[in-house]
Amino acid sequence: MQSDFYCGTDVVKIARSLLGKFLVTKLDGYLTSGIIVETEAYSWCERGCHAYQGRKTARNNVMFEQGGVSYVYLCYGMYELFNVVTNREGVAEAVLIRALEPIDGQSIMLARCNTSKINRITSGPGKLTRAMGISRMENGINLTANKIWIEDRGLKVKRSEIAASARIGLNSKYSDSALPWRFVVNGNLWVRK
DNA sequence: TACGTGATCACG
DNA sequence: GTGATCACGTAA
Image (cartoon, rainbow, N blue to C red):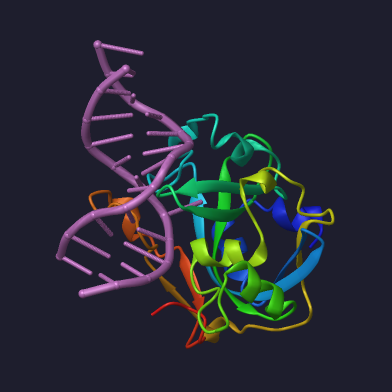
């Protein structure tokens, strides 16, 4: 996608429109890709976001850059989570990529995950980054360049095929955790159940 | 349901 | 410095 796609001011809309797009990486010399089938939106204006109320830290500072860069951080000491930063510079918003349907480079993904079963290898935000070779080394990189990018290959996901629900893993004591900002392709095999 | 795992951040 | 918390995944 071009830079202007990521600079949109409605992160929820962008999270929805990413469904059906292809996330592609060319890392360690290998090309891998998958269809995005689950996303979540995050915005500075709600409590689920690392940049809530515009709080800027060493970890989240790339969220404040102009849309079109990656935000990769370590979660629970073990998992690297990949986000697409959106909106204009200074407005911290991002979309977490939560699940993919693997397409290109499946044998590479299997090797990276040290398994022989493709089943569920990219069905979760911590798992898909491993399969795609994404780590914190890729934090802040330009998504219109040649390491990680997103392609529209013409696959259409109709509005009626998209389900919205509350985001996963947020502390339920905050009302923002109930916002319906998680989007999945209905019935897709690669969305965790 | 329980917990490994370690970086992060709000405290002081 | 310290300690609670955390956008997960797996086992059970």
